[in-house]
Each structure stands twice: as C-alpha cells, then as structure tokens.
Amino acid sequence: MPVDLANARAIEHWLDTEPIAVARIFAARIALRVLPLLVGVTSVGHQRTMYHEDARQMAIATFGALIPAWGTENIDITLEEKAFRVALDHIRSKYSGGGGGAFGAGGAAVGVGGSASPDLHLEAVTNAISSAVDVATAASQNRSKSDIIKLVLREIRLATIAYPASSPSYSEIAINPPVNLDDLVKAPLWRAEPPYRASTSWTYLQRTMRNSDKDWSPWIDWYNGRVQGRTSDGKLEKILSELPKEIWQRDLASINVEMHRAISLPQEDPPPSIPNPGPASTFIITEQGFDLSGGSPTELERTDKLQKSLHERIKTRLNQLGDVVGSSNQHLSLALEFNDYMRFLDVDLAELDVPSVWSTGNGLAAYVEALSNPQPGVMTEPLVEGI
Image 1 (cartoon, rainbow, N blue to C red):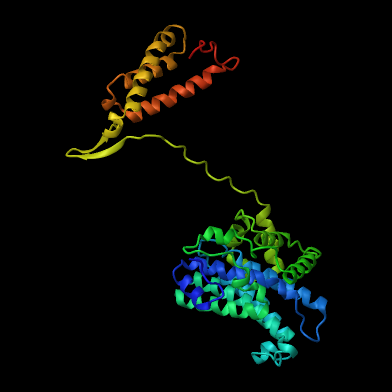
Image 2: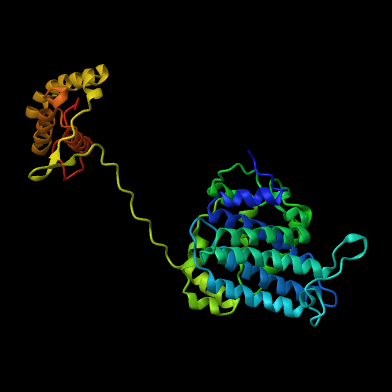
C-alpha cells in the first residue's frame, strides 16, 4: 500500500520500517527541492546581487555536505558539516537584521494576507536545508532511528513553510514499501517538470555560478542530474568522500580547487571481473582429511532423457573426429587435449566427471579459435576443414 506522504504519522511509520539510509536520502531530496529558493527571497535592506553571491556559497556548502552522503554507504561527514555550518552562520549573521530579524528573534511575523515575510522565508529555507544535513550527520554518527526520523519530520514542516512544492506530498515519487533505495536515489526530484518558481530560481542561481571566476560546473551538473533523475556515475560522490579531511577546514573555493584536482587525476580501471569457472570440483571430509569430489551428474541429470541423448551424440561426434584430429593435423597439443576430452566423455553418464569435461572442453574451444585463423610466422598449418 502506498505511503500517504501528506500524513506525518504515515511518513513516521514508513521510515521506522526502512533502513536509516532511506531517511537520509529522503531528507536530502527535500533539501535539494528547497535549495533554489535561496535566490527566491531577499532580506529587506540588502542588495540583490550581494545576496546571490551568498546564496552561491550556501549552495556549494550544501552540496559539499549532502553529495558524499548521497548513496547507500554511511559516510562520516563531520568536517563537511562544519564547512556547511560556517556558510550557514555567515548567512544568519548577515541577514538577521542585527539580531532583530528572523534568525535573531527565532521567528518573524507573517505578512499581510497570510504570506510569510522575506526573513521568515529565508529562515525556513536555510533551516530546512540544515535539517537535511543534521539527518546525514546523525546517520553517520549512528544515532537512534527515532532521533533521525524526528529531524526528517522537522525538515518537512520547515520545507512546507518555505515552499509548499518542496513537500513530499506534492513532489515525491510514489512510494510503496519496502522502498528500493536505488530507485529513491535515481528518481527525479519532482514527479513532473520542476515548478516554475523552483525552475526559474535555479536557472538564475546556476547562471551566477557559471559566470563566476571559479569553475563550479561539477556541482551544477550533479544537481541538474538529480532534478532530471539521471543516474549518477558516483564519481563526484566518491571524490568528495575521499578528499583528505583537513581540506574541509578550508574555504569553499579551496575545496573546489582540490575537487577539480582530484577529478583531473587518471581514474584507476576497475579490476577485471572473474570469469565464470563453470562446474567445479568440491572438497569432502574423509577420515584421512579432505578429499576431492569429482562432481558427477546429479540423480536427476543421470535419468534425464535429454542429458543421456546429448551425451551419446557428443561421443558419436568425437569418434567421427578422432581419426581426423590424429592423422590430418600436426598440432600435438590439440591432439592431446582432444584425447583427454574423449577419455573423460567415454564413460557412462553416471560416472561422468563434469568439471574435467568442462575444463577440457573449454581448452578445445580455445585451440580451435586460435588455429582457425593462424597468424603468419606462428602457425604453419591451419586446421583441416570440418574441425
């Protein structure tokens, strides 16, 4: 049954039945929907251009704290959180109106007609984002699930004040427990196109970021990917989580430089995947110690008509090829491998040594592939036709 995302109790019950990583990503998604509103409100008495510069710093600090936590792994973001708090404290001190505004007084009046004042909007936006960082930090510190859920519910209330279209009931994907965390990470931030206000605010904010003398493009591209629901390759998340922790004690511009340096480094190729070995022998315990079990066919396979028929057809085919391989080709290794294959197969089905048949069969296939197209100066005789 889908979760009623307009009901706080339903959300609380749902999160209580899911891993903590679900609450962490759920909270981060809400914060990312609120984030464009950093340029949607301007505190009275401050220049708009000044505020956009501060909003840019706040956005980067938010990305720095939330991107490493965007995934299934529970990563320690203690220092990333401190960098975020520095930016947040700057915003709060600058736009508190000397202690008498929303941040200083702990609340602001609602304007005429029920609309919130600019200060209250700004407080709700920054506090909603801050709550998501609180959730990620609490998860990395292994705090109780009940504490983390309380932080998520607080964030929802603040986000709804700041921007109703950021609330889960309006914006979240349909959730049917148990949730697939991978789907939650990959889903677009909004069910359909982003609402007009969020879209225009983010367009303006990313324009100011791209026009800066610093290259903030990886952060911008990451956010656009989350809006559109593109699958992240995990590169930026990995780089940020692996940056030396002391870097997070620097200013955001220095962090950005280090991130670009890490991106420019050649990435190690992933280790090659281990090929499927096929059927394999197993060890059994005897009175003398371990012994090797040949891996005979199962009882069902021994009586299966298709298996019996296939076994007989292979033996017949091998007998037809035997003379050709032995006399018409001068490749000794091929003949020896072929003889082994015939020996392993020329038994009753019940006595078949499946791992040995498998390995010699793979060896024959490799020989045939190599000898079918001999290279000049390497192979003096190709295989005869029919092998």
